[in-house]
Length: 256
Ligand SMILES: CN(C)C(=N)NCCC[C@H](N)C(=O)O
Image (cartoon, rainbow, N blue to C red):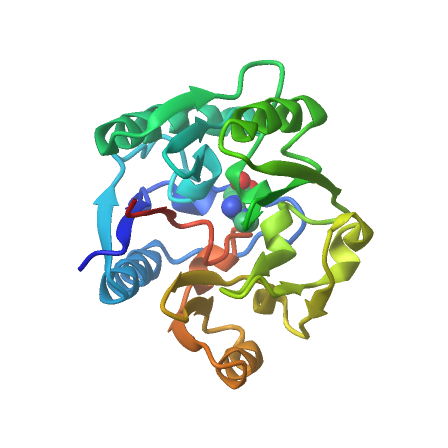
């Protein structure tokens, strides 16, 4: 039984040149990053996801953060127009992958910008972070595309944080785990559960109560277990040095 397809993209040799915005740059061990990516893929496969590799884009240091290049909603893939111009070439490989899977494909057009890391889907509500990478025109275009799938887009102004999903994500029951000081939480249509460690607000539901989260959030793993879910823990330390988190390294396409 497969839960669906998980798109991932291998880290390239230039990974250590990836963008950092709100943190200090530190040395990235590319060999360790490759081992961590293998373990990440194994965790997805172990949870029942069919891992598909998006063609490499090694000339783009941040290409491993494949989440930012597309928003998948039901049978629709919305290709993004990343806010960082140097990341826009990453989208071409993702387009090939989502077309190969058979999704309907649309795209965010200039001048709008949008990163997938700013898009948090909770049931029929789609929260979209407004900040350094996603602008109002990108949100407007996404709202039009997702309305065709019965979704309502809600913009959420960000503070000093890279993406919305750097600050808030959802457990399988819709509970929002957040660092509320990093965004305008009053824009959300539901309460948030504050966490006390940065990576504690980065979770990926994998199905049947399985929840992917980083090894750097041990207290949140215990909380997730106390709430009746099953933590699936991965070490992504080298990606955290580039402002990445567990959501960034994959795009989940549930089996229809
Ligand atoms: C939810 N998050 C944070 C993401 N989906 N993307 C992380 C991108 C990191 C990359 N160095 C950059 O700055 O673009």
